[in-house]
Image 1 (cartoon, rainbow, N blue to C red):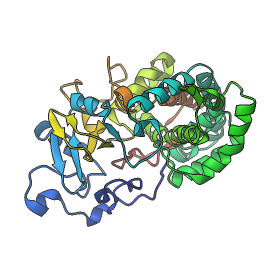
Image 2: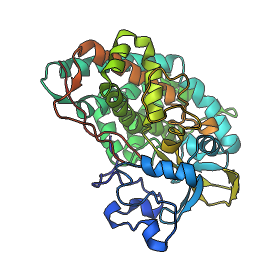
Image 3: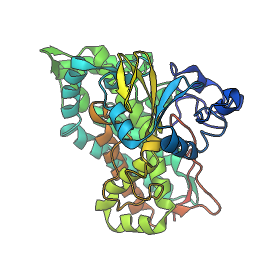
Image 4: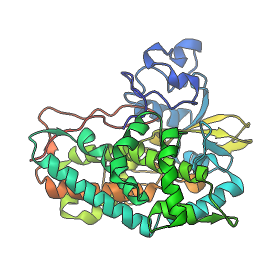
Length: 402
């Protein structure tokens, strides 16, 4: 799901990111041509079409380097990216109200609240919603001769599943998808329509809570006080935005990786217990956010260097996931890989608490497709073309359902 219009070479970044990332790629001047510097720039023409050759050069020769056009320091090796993503002094940009924007005791208190809320009954609610929605969508697709899985499945399922886990009316799913296109992302955003939509639900849950995720958030306490409506709305926005955008892109890449390898697809079809491993491996090889921006709120140490407060650090998750010092044959998609790592949804203290919800959504979505579409395969002549830098994935998956 796109949250902003996409130029020919890839998506425009969310508001508040460095100016260079909001300039159309065909208007950017490569760093090497501008001042003779050796390191490649992430804003060079064509990088958003395929960033992995540039990632390889950065990882091998420039593991920590300043990208002047981007206005950020680039960190690309697996261990260094893990360390940066887990640092207390690096928070998400632009400013916001989600866990990724918090630090210190505030972050710890809210995380201690949210993580248990995303287990138990919330996961059960999400699983039920994802399974029900997935089978409805899959059966509708099964009757067609040819279809686009992104438009007909990937973009609908994650939002509907999170909506169900929150206990919101299913009818709100279409509105949430529209809000995602207008700026609601995994970082929450400030979406007044979402806040207005949630207000009566929050009041009802506070007065008469149930077993859904929204009730858990409305009744939980931090330091003896309940979360404010603004805090709950921010967390809900993060879950809905992440479910709508990041999970949809990740699910599209997941399906593309399996459809590209009929033998592994057949293995998953025979052994559904391999689906979680297949999902984790796809996140490693093709993360939905290959470049994750962080801002230093105080001096921080990244890849052995001390960077001052205010510095923007670009954590190259896509480069880290294909680091040969961490993974054998890193460019290969292998559902039997022993340890694919867990970077796509963050690391350490800033790992995304919604990662489990995304994994469950992907699992139930794939189960439904495999059950309803036994002959699922690419449409003749079609090849997926992922694109994007801050967010990445195929925008079209043209298939034959039978």
